[in-house]
Length: 236
Image 1 (cartoon, rainbow, N blue to C red):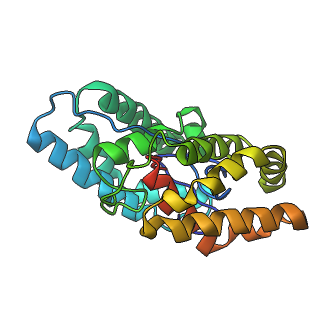
Image 2 (cartoon, helix red, strand yellow):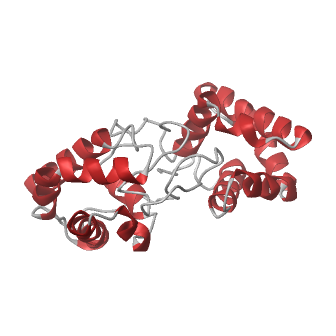
């Protein structure tokens, strides 16, 4: 996760948003998408451009920052548009890129509010990278379908639909059974993921007992959330 408030052109809707166990990033769950028969060259160009944009939007903190980044990367955006893969990912990318071009033309990042926030994760997963444009870990989606990951998905979706961090904390308070299910599965995780999962549970329970969501905004909590989400196949 990048920063306390993240606005990503591939996973946002041009506005500040909440998602994931961490309360602070934009985007939502994504499944691995197939290439749909795309040529190797098309996929290579498309994905190279996608990584460039992931990197370019790495430090976005506001809608105006997002708009400036879009304007500065119009060449990359146009090239990506010319190398859309066929199938689901191509259709989703076309919608995102069309909205981006409209946002630039209208000088209004809020145009992106009509873009489905799951598309960013779908595009990144297709290209084998995370939200930072870095390669997905070797254990990506290895835990998908387990009780811990099912709980993680439920918590991520619930918090992601919250209007703000206070509402997100209220959701967590009302769904402590899912937190307990998540906690019960930690011992079965690979050692590389266990520590991150423990951080999520301890920080979340502290936030609940203290009625203070601020701990959920910390970088260590965000990083832990990202580690577990990727293991569960959630690519924001």
